[in-house]
Length: 545
Ligand code: 6LW
Image (cartoon, rainbow, N blue to C red; front, side, top):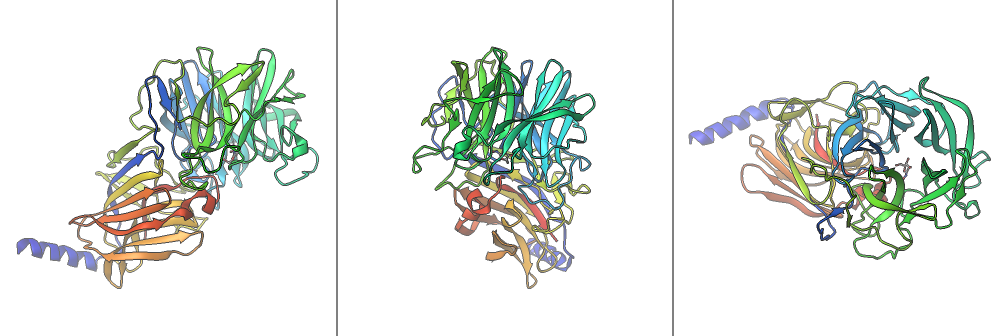
């Protein structure tokens, strides 16, 4: 009886309260790869960094490797990873983690920072990049790759995907720009080079167009991009992606005796693609390209690149991922994968001392629990657009979020932080205490591809009564309420999303046994095919008051 009164009192107190702050106490992720892979001794697993980690750029400094990825309008942005063996990657920071660096206000999820390039010269790390619709091309630098990174040095040229080539204490930038002649077709772009005075932080001298359109201009090649230069045995090699970042993606290579060309394409191009493989193949890897080559301290060559793992019919929702393959040189040209060969999920490891297994794995089956210890969020948490002031607070083992904009308001930052969904088969759960306090206030777990393609699974109040509810936003500005069920708001709520390719199930526990609010929900609207863009689904706590 006493216990019953206590519960009733709790409920009464809760019911009379104004809209309250949701307290999230645990976030749990558990992911399983959809493909079946037998990993033998001495092999590593692809992708090496699973989930939304596209456009990888890699560099070596001594015995250490560094990797950066695109992060678009997510903040913090440009994750920086370190590895000893090119296989075990641990995130060490985010190059964009202060609001004074870049402002993503007004940006859609897939605008913001495109493909970054990382390089190193004379004690300083350089990231060359483009903020699309937010300032254009820029460089940030750091003495320590874990940060802090500088504010941007803005560069005046047009286009995307700048990359720095260092030689003899001088630097040049290659990037994707408009062709010298008016474009002859949609997707007609060019690769240009210009010297960068790294001491003064400005472009100098003339710009030279190196590639017009792509390998064979007669075939109207599209989207030549992501260029990188390297020098080997007296040749300059220019490697770039061609065909667009979807299923026609590929990597091509050219060479010249001089840095300003003329560059001649390799007769065996592309050196990497999956575009001519049978469409209905099992366990497909698709959209491969955007490679960068790196030479190990042992003298071997490897390439990082992006590819995707659709769950069905070209659909994937976890973004473009980072893969690794060896590069072999034959007859003066680099080869990544023979024509018609499938990207392997397992391959022989680089001849490098084995690196430590990271505390937070990035490849294969893995899971983690974040109990919000300490007083800051782990560096893997991201939100949408640049916050003007801190909006998440971690204390006493709980995460709370300040009121923010609603999803869809591009001029604001939603009251949301999340982690990348890194597997198509994944269970994501959050435990929280929350009293909505008024009809319409809601908090829980959001799965967000962009402002118009998302779902919200949370607790709200309807006609004065607390309920757990599921809303979807399927390429629209408005939410659709899918299902509700009553709950006791005085008790802790655990919300669990079970993702399996194009469907999700939504479970909740509220003191008693776990119940399913809805299973088999079609979430193909979260796929890149439906939602468009370059990002992956990000799942985490939201609090809309
Ligand atoms: C990026 C371009 C690309 O700038 O996609 O796949 C663009 N390649 O190089 C966005 O990630």
